[in-house]
Each structure stands twice: as C-alpha cells, then as structure tokens.
Length: 87
Image 1 (cartoon, one colour):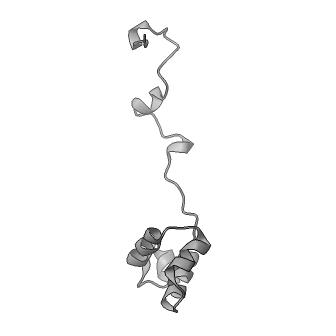
Image 2 (tube, one colour):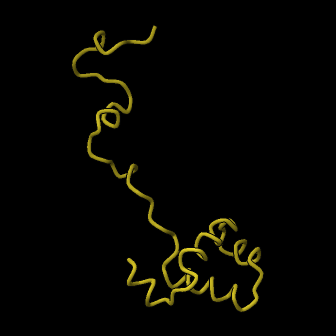
Image 3 (tube, one colour):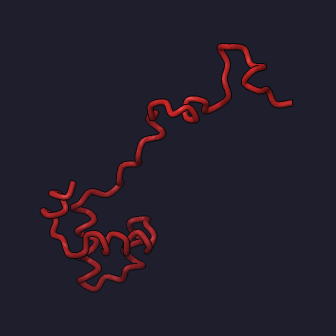
C-alpha cells in the first residue's frame, strides 16, 4: 500500500515533493547551456554555405540535422558579431 500524506511522519515527504510544491529550481532543473558558442554556430553555417555537406558537418559535431536547420533558420542571416549582440 502506498502511503498517503496523512500517514507519513511530519519529517518525511514524497519524492520530488519540493518540485511539486513549486520550490526554487535546483541546479538540475535549470535550462541547459548550449554546448556551442555563437562563433561555432556561425562557422558551421558558413561551412555549409561554402559547400560542405550538412550530413558531414552534423556527424563531425555530433548534432542532428534538425538542430542544424534550427540554427540556420534562427541565425542564418546574422554575422558572428550580430549573434553576440543577441545574447
């Protein structure tokens, strides 16, 4: 039988109870930081424009083609300095 909140001693709680109650976000709950800098994204997009196959770039970086095309849609027209300003 699973315990209910009324049957638990006062100092015990369900797992992840802090998350359910809307407590402050812990380190594991924060947004993940990007593995790639603006300069790296810009370089990858320029390499693709220069004729390097997208599949080869994605394989080299360990990203999916979907990620590449999201970057292209978001940052395709921007230069490296403009990418930094977006931050």
